[in-house]
Image 1 (spheres, rainbow, N blue to C red):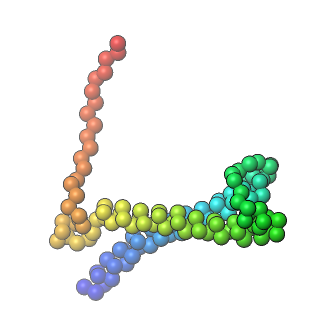
Image 2 (image 1 turned 90 degrees about the vertical axis):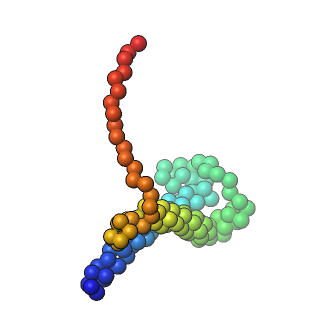
Image 3 (image 1 turned 135 degrees about the vertical axis):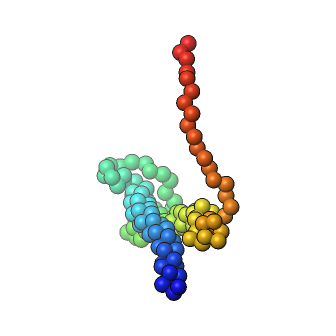
Amino acid sequence: MFVSNFLISLENNAQILWKYIVSGIVFLYFLQSDYKGTVGRIEGINQYTKRPQYLGPVREKEKIALFEGRHKALAFRQALISSVVYAGLLLGILLCFFKCLNYSNDQRKGGRIMNLPKLHFSFQPQSFQAF
């Protein structure tokens, strides 16, 4: 009894854990890409081609930080904030969406948390005639 409950809770924790792992990977990806993009926008240089290019408006605060040499710290702060927002949105969507479609191991409920109708898809070929 105890072992089966432990295994069920371990399985439920694993289902939640992968959502955090995916959100963490997305967070790191957005942090890296947003940082490069923000540094490039402030410096006016495309970080991938290393050529001067207009990448968007630069605020006065960012221009001052560029001249003082602290623009990379400012860019990291901006990238960190945006990455937290993006990863948080993704995690919220994953948790809410899969909670609605999650199937439980509880056989008393018929193996389903919500009583959503089962979707049945069928493909019936039809004949098409050319004009």
